[in-house]
Length: 256
Length: 272
Image 1 (cartoon, rainbow over the protein chains, first blue to last red):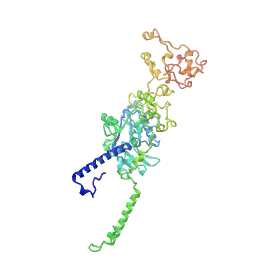
Image 2 (image 1 turned 120 degrees about the vertical axis):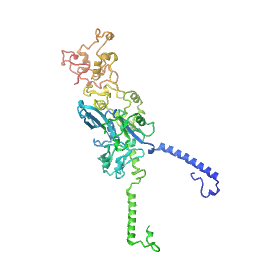
Image 3 (image 1 turned 180 degrees about the vertical axis):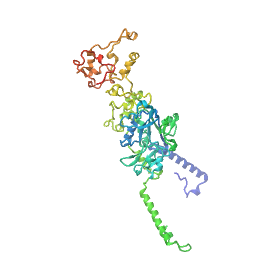
Image 4 (image 1 turned 90 degrees about the vertical axis):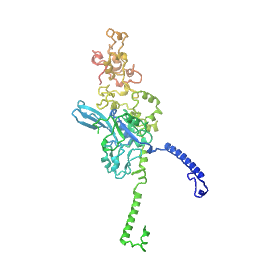
């Protein structure tokens, strides 16, 4: 089908016939190729067609901790407060100029750290792995156990990680932890097992305030692309050139 | 490679013996490296990048525990419809009901949680200074203490209990107090009868007030009919789950000389 001529026939072909056969072969190959890619798209997921990101609106976050709870349930994360793939910080700016950052406990309500009369302003900031396009954690991994997938998610290969903790040190956002059961590094995967099935990450699914918007960064018709068009955005620690794919809308200048 | 060694006669200078040995050793290390690499480097390493390509499908194969709200709509269209019209319409089903993929797979045996505890809703709606301004919040200590939230609020389409506008227009203070009290679900007309003239000339035509101890005793006397607690309430919402929730006293020994409202404030009755 794809070989229009054979060596033995070559002498018998004139140019017109040869070109005709070439044309037929090319058309056939094209049709077959189209049919195959469509079948593939239906059958399985093509990572190269996607690029995921998340936007966070701290102005909507109510600090209920459902995202932390859902993340732990969905991803079987150990219950200890030191092991969180996503977490919520309470920023308290006091009238005497201090900035207090407090991580919430997902299992019970966390009271504000200072008396309410001393608060100048206060708000919650949900945090998670920023899924950097230029991730320091991937750079430092000595064995290639952490990597960035074609769809832009930074993942950890648990079976290959040697637990050296370089990546935990390298992450400027503190998004990684050592799994106390396997002694391997672990972090937010954007719920890779969910997004590749067309679902949204668990934290986005349960957020009652709509503070997290997940979607495709490419193309104009994803909820995320729309949100990014209409919001004033910031990323965390932009001076580090990590190029995060988690964007924060209307972020307070005190947030680091 | 090795057949080069003996052929070093004729025109070219002979390769010194020590170099030959070094070459053999070098060849051995190259082979050892190739063999070691074959066994030590995982099969799919480097297929896409400097990592094990097989790790991606492995991570993607992790089981899903939160089914997503679309999955709920297939079997619970009625709830979804109520929910879509209420103020909780953007809140996912699994935010309150917990991970439900197991329930979707096996609806008969696995049931998701139905949180009715009083400390569940304040995780979002309890007062916290860091919450955004305007987000509905309550002081849990004084907001109808001891009652489950579902007594007054339908979680799928929540709304604060309201008084008829005809009462609340003038008696806003009482309406607000009562809305957060244990009597939140008792309608005004249960205790008061207001004639139509009350709206025109309120002072000249005051509404009635309960005048006997027995009136309150219908619910609060010891041994009062348990079901009487729910009498006069709108169906469903607001009905106390059982008479045991209603504090009951012995009418013969409890403050005989006074009417109930001389000591208790019925619009915000104190709690046990």
